[in-house]
Image 1 (cartoon, rainbow, N blue to C red):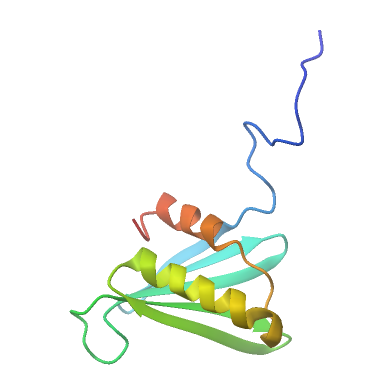
Image 2 (image 1 turned 90 degrees about the horizontal axis):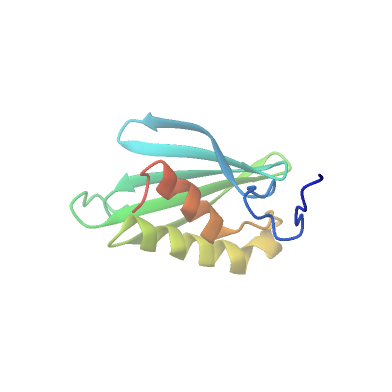
Length: 120
């Protein structure tokens, strides 16, 4: 007897467009996570500090994307890794279309980063 599967809800099956971490590594003290989603790539760099030399003050997150051959970097610093990521996502969403960056589901990026303990 054939099983009735609801393809629209994606129940039990991850969406193919959901970002997935393809590579994760450290560059010095910075954790770099490269994510792929629907053929596009974004690289998230997470490091301790405020980006202004104070390593004891919060977290800095950079999102690297490419437009043609030019690398675009969106940066934010905040008290937690998650809040810095969400600020980067907000900036990316506002500036992205103007800069030619691909659309990114930052909530889904956060889920992927939680899965590897890159953020909490």
